[in-house]
Length: 271
Image 1 (tube, rainbow, N blue to C red):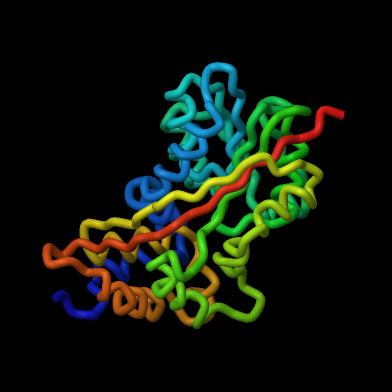
Image 2 (cartoon, one colour):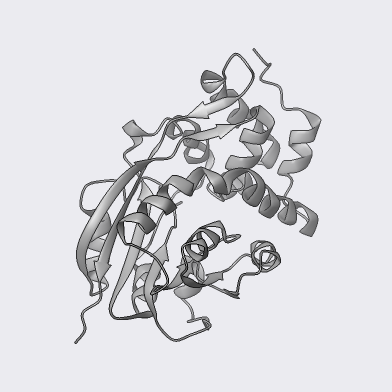
């Protein structure tokens, strides 16, 4: 079994105090982490019958893989994303992505989107907030649908033990990735934004990595460890993250954790 020491390459990749470091995080998301949520995207699109009649806006669309999958089903797609590095990667994929669309941004302003309203708006955030959901509903056509998603219950997510590293070091008040995992929470977010819940689902999203280094890089790219890094330092967080991943190491050196994600959909009233 590999040692718990942080390799030089891992320490180098977790530095975020420079534009190059932030760009590296965006690439790690696109190249390592984003594919872990493909089962979630596909389950939503299949059940909602996303196709040529769908105009989809992805809120917090990151580097755009979810949009690409919807476009592959014939949908017209656009996105909003706060992180400039992720927007650049989405643009390189031929996607139209505007600034904004993260919880901190929409609480202060309403960033522009390519068209005023869409038949489907997806919020594939890992910790959706009331402000973000309300902003998203405002960009949904009357009779259109809004999807919100989150981690499932911690007891159904092996990555919960790894995310404990972030909770341990983050300052008080940091977002809890499992805050929306309790029954009815996603539906309550929709109701509070003025839409009627009309369906839900849950799907397994295993996190599988080629090795410890890629697992650390992928998990850090989610942003869930940012506040812990600010408080305790990137090197310490990376070291403890590697240690927390050891129970999920396989004999071939790969890492795999079973997780459940949940989603709910609501319909915006026509009147």
